[in-house]
Length: 106
Image 1 (cartoon, rainbow, N blue to C red):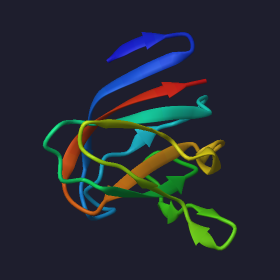
Image 2: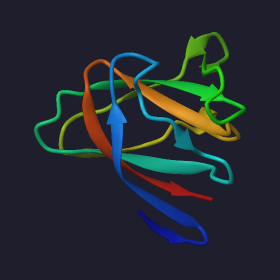
Image 3: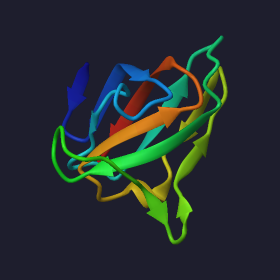
Image 4: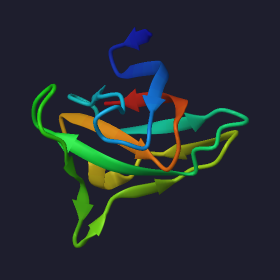
């Protein structure tokens, strides 16, 4: 992992189709970011969950009445939804298992 005062690059984030097995992302101090989906990945959608504490109970993130989701595709980079700003810990549950990279910006 490469760190600088305003940037963190996560080189391997495990995505699964279940909240209990998806990797937890420390989003404290960050406001935005990008998900990089590698070539050949079968992950096409992410539903975002948030928690106030590390290892805590993760709840589905909502923007009004709708769950916050990201449509992604192999060999593409997609910005994180703005509705995730302010959450302490994130999980992106996929429609399929895979690994992504992420960059987080403060």
